Length: 219
Image (cartoon, rainbow, N blue to C red; front, side):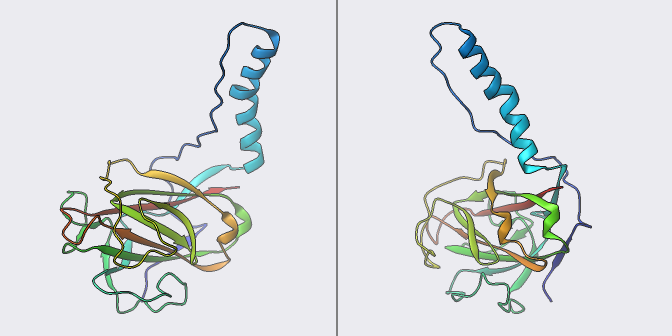
């Protein structure tokens, strides 16, 4: 059976995600009351208002890279429904993330391949308690991520969806996950699914990495 995660009785973040507010840049040629007010609004009041709009009390990480994932090396097409909640992944392999090879960051090592498909289910008891959704991933070379079949993030790969054997732009895993904000309206009460496809620059690429996390800002 597939691995499940639950919320709100989920694991706490090991390192609290940092919200990064939009940066504002100014070409200040003189000091005036107007410019001082503008700077105060940008650096003090805007972040305060932003956090009030989200109403986030704390963040919890519900999916860690080191959890157990269902995965499918992309030697053939997994089919068009692989990223849907109802898809039967019982015949897929199961392993601890990260998944890949030759980067010294893999808990599950696979043979060199052009692509990798990953799935993990999680349960939510009350979506009203979730105010923000953050997806983080350290990857090599490109990826597309989905919640309940809808794309939430991508980098280094084209196609909607990409072909299973599509090649990605060259990108090395950096040791620090890249963050993306997702639409919380994609979540439902009950069973949910995070699905990720990782693509290499070629089937003979020297390495591959997939180290994803999913965190929620809680009311």
